[in-house]
Image (cartoon, rainbow, N blue to C red; front, side, top):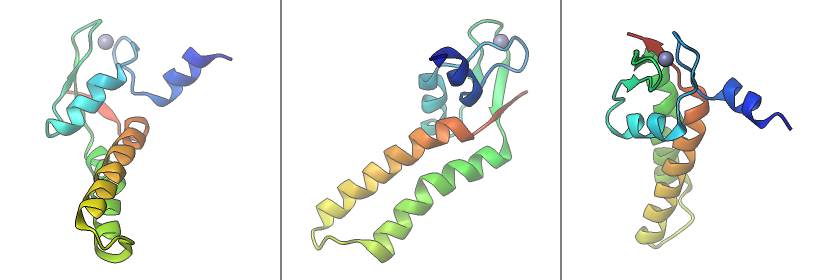
Length: 104
Ligand SMILES: [Zn+2]
């Protein structure tokens, strides 16, 4: 399989030199209040698009709140919290493939 090619299709690339960002760079950016990402190859700084912020929130915070308020199947609040954190982590992994950055 052309794994590398497919990975390139989905993960954000540098707008200037086309080098793929590492998923860890993007993931860290999410949790540091959308910290700009610097390309390791050419040093170009990329900022998150406004749409990217909406995508991130709608994949993480939103499903977590919906789950917490409306669909919580557990009486145990620790279990609810654990499930909410799982949703947050899974949502943020999905967000890696949908949130886009632009050259600043
Ligand atoms: Zn670059």
